Length: 94
Image 1 (spheres, rainbow, N blue to C red):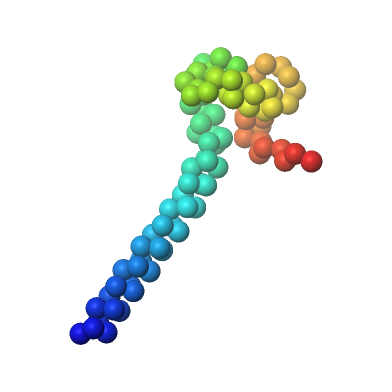
Image 2: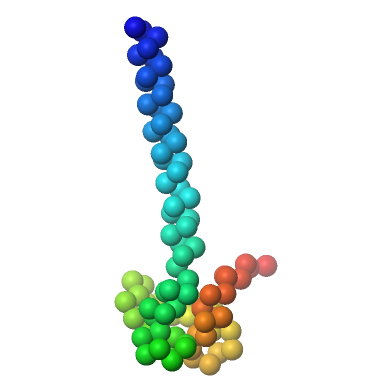
């Protein structure tokens, strides 16, 4: 009986840790999906094929941070983001 209880307790602990580890990749996936084609379509409110600064900043939690991201992503400095600019991965600092 003691062995059965110990085995069940060990199994419960293992299952708990396995569930916690499974949750971590989901957090990364959530961030990775931030700049998807679906998000581009949602942000492109007037459906002109690009996202203006106003469209990008709309509903931003942190406007200052969002503006910095917009400037970084606007590779050709035309004041709007093409789909390619929007979907481009973040450049790593040297």
